[in-house]
Image 1: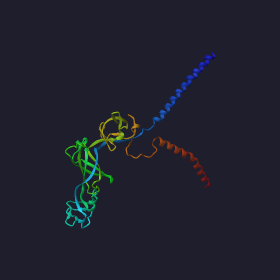
Image 2: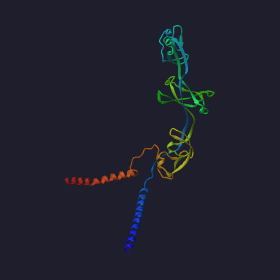
Image 3: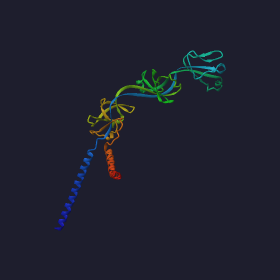
Image 4: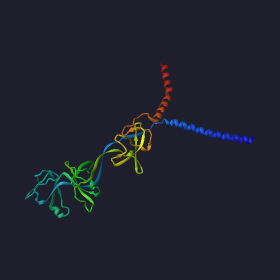
Length: 331
């Protein structure tokens, strides 16, 4: 009997321990569920889809060439008066006074000089004067044949010059060849730009960006897209701030934005950043992209700081009361 009683007691204690563990785990789970179920929805940066200009670009390079150039070979012994080089002259003005003749400008331009460097003997006795009209600059470039169907006269062009890195000059496609070169498999194309300021000097290295297929299209930030295999998704936010995973068809990417061809409409609210924090059917607290974050005691961190501040105030209130009483007694 004693042995059976011990076994029964052990079994009862064992089941009581198991039951206690189950009850404890259940109570702990309910406690945390109540605590974290009151957690506010996460703040997610959102924006709206809108129309934006998209364009394709052909990037190439070339050398600046003046619109007009005229050269004169002069013997140094013929020069009667010093020539004012790097000076602007008008059409008909005298460029150089020589013993037997005068050289006049056939068009408005700038007088330049170039020595004969190939033959030292000739360089000592002769100079070459250039009259260059730089009011417009030409730049001949080669366009790969894959882009030939898009080249048209009048296409806008952005031009960069290393001397002014932060400045973009405007130009256009002036003309192009009638056939593709068999050697380079490219189409010779001429770019024209206004150079009334004279900032671009002949011979300068120019970076050319030819724009084509310029169009207005629906756009979204490229940080809002989620790529899963061959499919692309964007989280769309409804009126109740609940997100839905929406499949979209995208086009080109340009300056941090992606072109939306299908799946969204203009004005739709979407998740712009922080897509990893979002899941379908989640309710969020939308934060407009670009809006300054409000400083305050919102959220869990703010509430904790506020409680700590109140606790600190409460700890030292009794000291203040003592000082107030002592001051009253003195009076």
